[in-house]
Picture 1 (tube, one colour):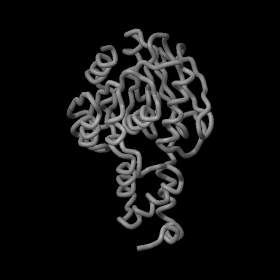
Picture 2 (tube, rainbow, N blue to C red):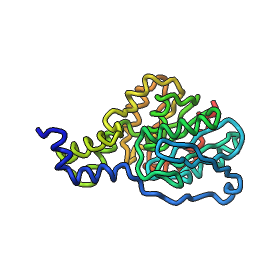
Picture 3 (tube, rainbow, N blue to C red):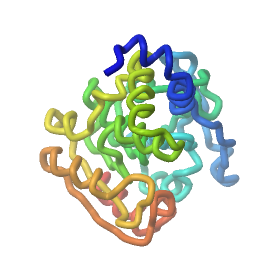
Picture 4 (cartoon, one colour):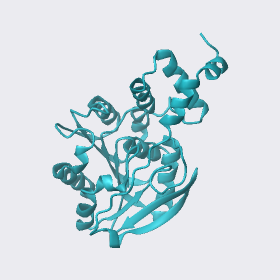
Length: 262
């Protein structure tokens, strides 16, 4: 078995892919034109630079946390319904996403940014996260995020599993995958220690997990395992909505809004 320094020295491809794993591609924002005049932008100081955020409305605040390589427009079906129901909406560009600063980001850096948005927003009623955004929201809750309710869509269970799936897609063998994980650890990502099922038992927020059986990105078993570990959490299984279509489903939007409003 190689020593750690030997693995890092010889793992050139694995190290490059470790860097790629934490380097998101930026997507342009897709604003709903009717909402654009009401968007109030602001900035907060994140752990790796300025973090861009926006606020709409003035009611109890609901924070939206997009997924990896996602953006605020992913929640375009949720925004008008939340505003119509009297909620204020806050959304951020995660570090290295959108107009936020940075080129790489980890779950911890993103969770710290969420906490900073909460601090300047003076309290949150609820958080809605999608995909890795759900894991970020849960990590932030474990670090002190104060929100009464959390809606987690298509949530992965473990950061390490996300990295392993990425390694498989990139064609790494088992040894190279371990090299990539080691490189990520040396970069301070805590990739092998962030686990929603391990965070969940300590959390007291009311939680709703929504997951589609045909999700080809994050298996539904991840969401179910996390929900079972979260005291009192609800789990709703749907089908035919995949990983991203679930964000555009009127039924999912209404289910989330009902839970937030209870």
